[in-house]
Length: 497
Image (cartoon, rainbow, N blue to C red; front, top):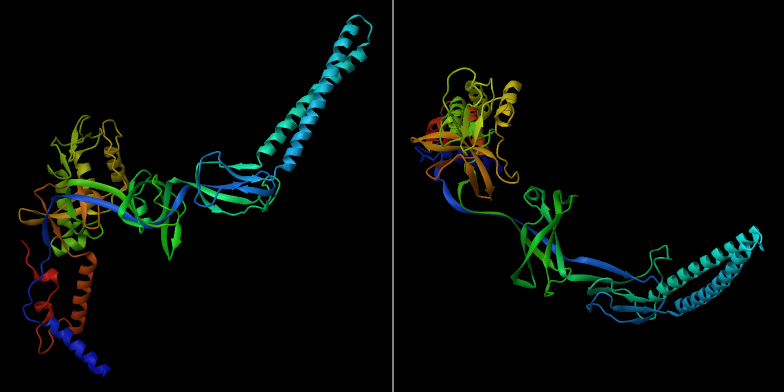
């Protein structure tokens, strides 16, 4: 049964290859460059978190006598939350005050003795040693007063610490103790003390979301974001990107970066722990020239695309160099006499920027180096240095290239229709979504770009034709039409304008 099925499949494949005069498939589709609105956003899921969370602990140890709040209570900064047994602190404060009274009495006595000693010392009725002792006793008494005042202040602070007050204004989100429980102070307990409450300011909340590394380069702090939660599906909440964590998180072999989005929550609708859908608005361009992403080619796959269109690599390189010099394309080179250009000779780029060729650099040198670079050929170190000198402002008179946002777009090659024939040209793109890319330079509204098969599809068609050629020995199969002539891949069957 399996053998019969294999034979049948092979017969069907041969029959498909031998269908006479199959309808030609189009090699490319011409799409006009048009103005469109391009919107790019990154979507991710996250969880609502408080913007500011504080653990409340008591600096005083002892039994909890009063507990004035419950979870969900809203308090202001300085409100009394918990009262701890103050008896020990009161006793310490009373003892410190008594010690301060004694120190003040001793200071008064030492002051009187010092005054008498000063008078007797002036009348020579007291020795110098006795006078020095009186001065020392006075200094010690004054020091005792200062020490006692500090002890009183510390005792007062410890007494005040028995009243645990709100460090910030916010909402109690967790309660860890009850009335009658004995707690420990973090100042005396090496274990960090007892956590009494957790409170947060819910007027501001955050969403912690994980964004794929392929999108993280487009995101930066300050971007606008829209957050939706299941509790309010028809009410989006506006937020902004607060920060991007520097350390990546790997989940199921996918590398992602945590992104924090801050949201105003003055109505208190968003609760910690809610699941949220986040849409970060990366960029928007309204009414800009755009081309389909399928029309964009890189240096690596331009050769396969050229083969589909019947162009050779030499023709493509010539077209790219031609586009670099033609008005309205990549650059315009003003004619000049042969030989070295004097200082002040200019080259006008498509974006209107004019650069001055350095002294000693000829037009032919620049043209040849640009031709090599656009065609994908390897340039020599001297040619690289020459292009860098021309476009970096070195040599007295060059102008630096305009800076572009590295998060978006890039340099690509597209094929356009010129005089009814395919023509390769360089373009620069800006903002791009999954389907269209903004055209920064290189094309106009009257142009049409050619959408061709992908490089992978072209290669697979080549491999299929080669396999069939090996199977048939390069000739036809008896009783069947030659697949090489009757059912070729799209690259060989279609006509070109």
